Each structure stands twice: as C-alpha cells, then as structure tokens.
Image 1 (cartoon, each protein chain N blue to C red):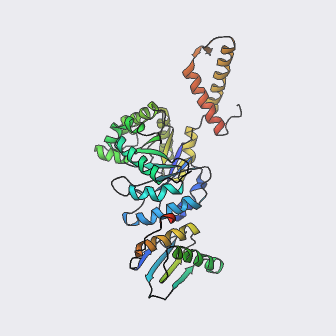
Image 2 (tube, rainbow over the protein chains, first blue to last red; image 1 turned 45 degrees about the vertical axis):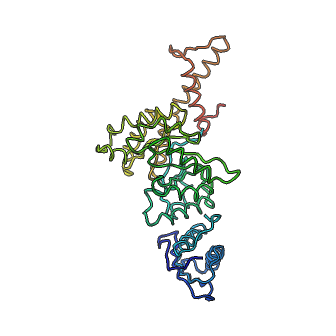
Image 3 (cartoon, rainbow over the protein chains, first blue to last red; image 1 turned 135 degrees about the horizontal axis):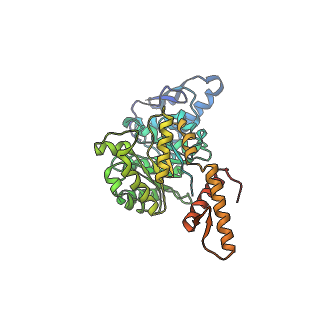
Length: 96
Length: 289
C-alpha cells in the first residue's frame, strides 16, 4: 500500500457529505467522527457505509471526519472512495 | 427507435442533481463529467457518477454519460463508467471518424460480459467536427446519434452567437443531413437562455423543421416546452390516420398510389404518416394500432 497523506472530498452542500481523512498510527484502527443533520436516525448506517468502503480497500489505520448534509449511500460511497484515492490508496477496479 | 426529444445535462459532481435526475421526465439524462466539472474535481465526479449509475433509479430516462475528450481524461473515464452500465456515452469534441473508432474500441474493452452494448453519441462542436460529420456518423455501428454543440462551434468560427442562429444554420443542416444519411438521429444544440421560454420554443420549432429529432437541454424547466414542439399534434395525428386509411383503401383496390384532398399519397408520404403514428402511440397520444 502507498503511504497515506491527508485528503478531503465532497462539499457541504445539501445531499452531499464532506469527508476528510488523515493517516493514523499503526494499530490505531479506523476512527470515524461523524456530524450529520440526520445523526439520530442514520448515524450508525452512515458510519457503517464509510467503514465498509474503507475495509474493502484494506485500509486499517485512518482517522475520518465526515460532515453529512443528507447524502445518499451512493454519495457516501463515492466521496469515501474519492478521499481514499486522494490519500494515495489505489482503488480496486471492481469498486469503480 | 429511442426517443431523444430532450437530453438533459446534470452536473456530474452534484449529488442533489444526480439523485433526482429521473424525476424531470427527460427522454435522456446526461451525467456530465466534462464542462460542468472543475478540473480538480474530475476524480470525485467520476466516482460519483459511477456510483449513481449503479444505484439511482432514473426511471424511463436513457442514461447517458458525457465523458471528457480523448486528449484529456477519456481514457480514465471510460473504464470507470462503462462497467456501470450507462445506456450511452456522449463523446465531446469529436473531430474525426478515428476519434469515434478509438472510443468504441475503449468501450468494447471496458464492457462486462453480458452487458448491453453501450451506444455512442458524437457531439460535434468544432468546424472540423462539422466538416467530418458524415464520416463520424458512419464510423462505428455503436453511433446512434450526432449532437450539435453551437457554443464552442461559434467560438471557433469567431462568429457572434445570436438568438436567431443564422451563424449556425449551415452547421445544423450538415449535422441533420449527415445523421439522416446513415439512418441515425440528430440532436440540436441547447438553448442557453433558460428564462426565455418563447425563444426556446421558436428555436426548437426551427430545429424540428430542419429535421432534428431532439434537443440538448441545460435546465429541467425546458423539458416540457421542448417535448410539446417535438410531439405530433392532434392535426398531425388526424392527417396521418387519414393518409394510412387512404393508402390501405387504394391497396385493396390494387393501386400503389392514393389520393387525399386532391394530393397524391405515395410511399414517402406514407412513411411520414407512419412515423407520426408510431411516435403518437409511443407517447400515448393515439390509441390506433
């Protein structure tokens, strides 16, 4: 895997989610810090969607700040993938 | 025949627009990776459009993706987008048959086994593209339509873009004729003043009169008015039904040519009437089979 660098994807517009990622120390795990206008209703589901994409890319140590403005799953997945790609992770072809 | 009266552009990096693309009733929606996306956001838009194609229900709208030109990001866009099963790819700034053949080759490589063949629509928006229109139209069997982009075209010409469109008249007729020569559709340039509905209707009527089968659209508010122009009218449908009745009667009497209201009805007239009735049935405007 390439060395990770901090990166960001998405916007703060309605229906979008802004995802910022920073590499974590080895063994720090995947930490997801989520702000959302629908945190009470969909917080766990949004975190699960982000975590699933990160896991599929075999990233194990990363800090993720996500600010959600009502994004659908497909948008959360796309923004997470974009941020991961911008950190230097090479995308698996089947996810594109 | 696929209806392409309206092909509505949606900015490829705008989740709100992409997720609602199916509700506007356009015959086709174009998820745009080119002009609507800033260069530093091409990667984000590509992934967003790919995910949207896989998950968003666009209803009956044809799913079209405008990729970037071959000399920029097309070679990255195609393998990312094609496996997500768009119905068609809109190829911008096409200037030669080789451009289309190269895109067709890349698309064929990117298609998954069993996937419906992805169609191509060539967007002609340069003087060279217009000059090569016929060869582009017949460059590959995937090409189902030629579309015309007048803004870049007139910029290249150095001509002022006007509402009347005198400066694009020749290019429009070349696009229509080239497409018709190989039996594919022609789609007109968008009308860019979204607040001028009267101008939109007049421009669309001209496009229909010239032979275009549809119009690119940049705003959902334009869709209904464009559809109204391209839909057959009640008078059209009545005329077509009378033509078909007249020719059937003549055939029953052993004649190949009929007469209606003192005018000869022969094969080209019948073909036009059949097309009107086909469209009317497709659009639910006529019940007659």
